[in-house]
Length: 477
Image 1 (cartoon, rainbow, N blue to C red):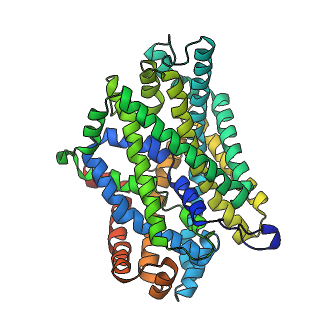
Image 2 (tube, rainbow, N blue to C red):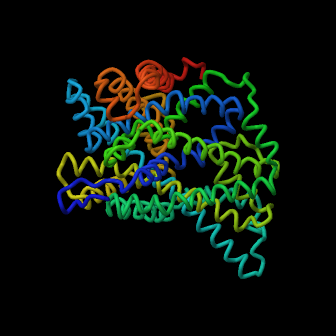
């Protein structure tokens, strides 16, 4: 049962399945449903996809096990959990510094993540209004946005960016939902949300994928996603796939450390982590199979980039049977994924405030949720009022980026790889072997394989992501 904070006991998941649902929800987000299809399209499909899957299981899975191990062992916020594992392993408590890095990264990410999720919320409203119009017209199975030109449909994004008030209202609504769930705690907040939202997410994902199989070009989509052209697997593409594996599993931001700390009782971390990795990868692949049949069926460009979801697909839904309904369900699907990820991001600093500062859950969530909202305001103003502001103008890598892209780029290129790198070094080289074996339930050859991957392969690969991200000229960019 979930422990009561009123009794002084720390909160926890009610069951292993509850933890898995919440952890999958943390991993499954915009990175899977929006970013993965975007990157797959931009990087040539099959070779990128297969290399990405290999990265998930050779690099992502060992890191998932490591983060959950730290949290489950420490039974505290990210910083406190790392400190306790270090103490039990005879290592310096200074290792907890990379937990602080994760807390700051999660806080910054949820601030701009809420702004981007606000775009999704806006499109839910647009498609919802269109579907209501279809119902009132007695034609619920018509295409979406009938009568609008392609230019008008694609211009909605620009109109949204040009309106600070609209961006702010969407950001406020989304952050409000995230804050409400986190403030309610583990049992009645995060676990309850995951128990409702994740089954809903999977039903929508499978239903829209089946729809795409019938009305779209599934054969071309399958060939694009799973037939590798190895000539396209350049160092840049491999580096992108490595980064996406970390991003999609929410590694490096201490989210799984925090969620792992709420595990009560015995639970083998190997099978649990494998389930999370399989589910996360499955969602990414299904998202590709959901989106690309529709894209190919109407002759659109799969390499459209970040505009694929917000500008390309709404036009595609116009020409599809029941496009008004499917368009609405599609953006609801993305919104659900965004909510489950955002609550895990906000929970990281909230748990830190509770564990390290002694604040109540309500106070901690309000402080960090409110702070993230304010940072998000700066991010959204970067598209209009502050469009000339360049936060890191002195750094060539970020010199031309607006506020949101700067925060996104800095967390993604610097903070996440650093967090994952230190996690790998800490668990692979500093954590006591007997403690690892006891807490993970992994032993024998599998323990040796995991320790090799986390101690050698992960630091090398993540270090490569960090260096090439900061110095892209190395790869010829």
